[in-house]
Image (cartoon, rainbow, N blue to C red; front, top):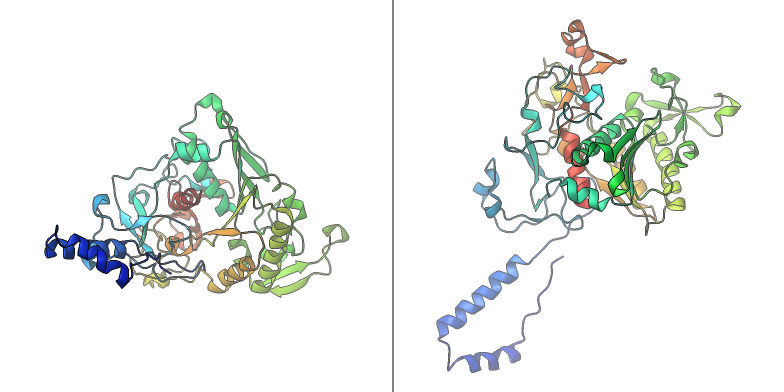
Length: 430
């Protein structure tokens, strides 16, 4: 689809040329016409499909292949248009190394990070993973601006809902804005399910709500480590959803907890009647039922004129180094650079599950915008917490670090790190 500019008809054009003839030489008239055509060409914009699977680029303004291959692009020569979620996808692009880019925080400067994601504190010495910038092929993703973000949130509640990966995105967002707020003007209250960061001067809150499946489960709290013992009430979000009301911006996710087994024990009805009577369903089927339950709640309870709803797509895992050609590798351990192969798709990102999300959301009445982080994150084998993390509330021992094949965490991300880019995309939508 193009933005059309009406061209004058032949009958209209002829007299105007006649009027110009006595005053302007033919060369000037031709130059004017060529200039007009060039201007018309640069105004063409091609719209893209909103599908979360779309990998084809938007139509670019003309650019040489040489410019596309440069590791860093001069902003003055950048031919990409400004980000607009209706016109450009962030799916296609590349990670560009730029040491001049400094994170807005460190795990020393932000007091709100869990030890699980504080890789530098936990002994990680390399730092390059913090200086990669995602550049979409066709548009410029605006840099995260803490002052603008806080102004956008003035008088509002922003809530991230989901699992520990969503908690990482929440902590990233808090750390990206908190440095701008005086100590006596901010606070953080943590709870088992619900944690709230308050920016008092802005009368805004940035919140996290723990619901790893979105639907109710017997493993919400306390967590049941053995996936075979987990049972889900796929027909109910009621235990959680009472905390999602009167929120201005909701950001949901759920994926990795569903991937712990091929079948999910699914229950209809209350746990008060006991945990018997469950049915084992194939994971994609249980996932679809659970997401439909969530979607029904959103459609029935969210007023789109007051609340914006986002869904963060699945965060990829990197537990099979053979995916990127390291047959003898130890998962993501010791990886220091992103994958450079365009359109790489690892085994830790399930397209079937992603398809379930897409089909459920497209049938919803309330608009849901995707924060499409899957493909861009799939390149980042270098940015996981790996052995620089904790397990069971304790940092890995030297013996555990020496055995990364069994102990490296290639699911969660170091902070600062990749989730900062997820929030850069969310910021662009806001």
